[in-house]
Length: 366
Image (cartoon, rainbow, N blue to C red; front, side, top):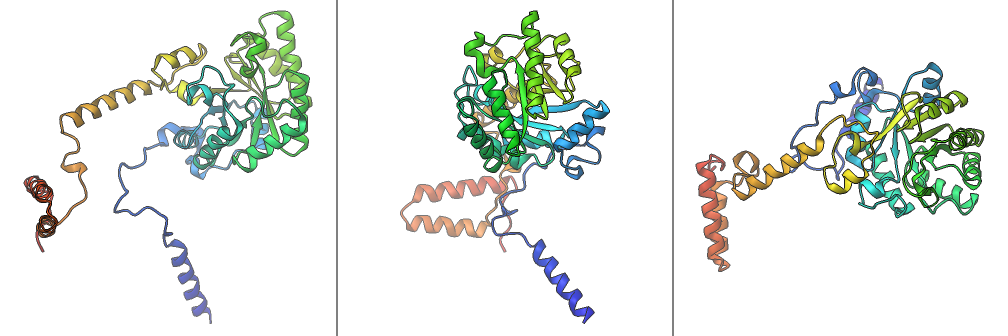
């Protein structure tokens, strides 16, 4: 009996290991291998992001309590989410800044909730370890608390996020944050420069540069904490103001252009990598951003080399022409083409086969 059970378990295990029908075939895919992320992940990622525990709001509270800085990166798609995940970043924020960085707008206002949900879903497929936070875009939560809750529910249920972020300031937004928290959804607040409010702010302007403005930053942050937010983003405020807010709050502050005294920092994936070289992005790349790489130059160089190799017909060469046809089948193929009245096509196939044979590509006749 025991032997039969063991056989059954082995049979079940073999069935579970069997690839599903929709898995890409190795005959078609199997190009460049995944990059080595071990060095990039550093000591903070432990034995690798894949083996690490999923970051939760409780994880962030523990880091804040221990005084450990929190790392946040804003990303908008699957490839960047995979990189953020592999690097061991704590929080991946799907920001409405996608309107500017990805879609080429001059502000964050044009992006809709439906478009944001597409970005959220893509990021959720790529990042399995970080806490995932989705922005509520302009126009989907200001009119009523009911609409705010409905929008937040969609971000979690349809977007695959763990929490939402909204820009605070006005009493109606504080009420919206409170209602969303009461609905059982974690909320990250946002004070200082709130890009969705550029109409009343008069543009993208730093906040907290006067006594009244600095006090308002702290008061709004405290109100968001009182509403139940688990953290607050402080954007484009002087360092002393950020330090005061961080000291006054019992929840983590995430700085972006707010100096070194916050509980953590956030930068946009494209900005910190130095990816954008187009004049439009030079216009919207913030002054506070440190570029930790020059990926844009690497991309431009690679694209230029690709263009040159295609134009000189040096790409694709033998090593990048992997799919073979036996010489005997080439002959049969050419004969079939001739019977179809496609003599030029038959000659082209024969010439390509002859060229491939010179390069040692074609397998011998069997």
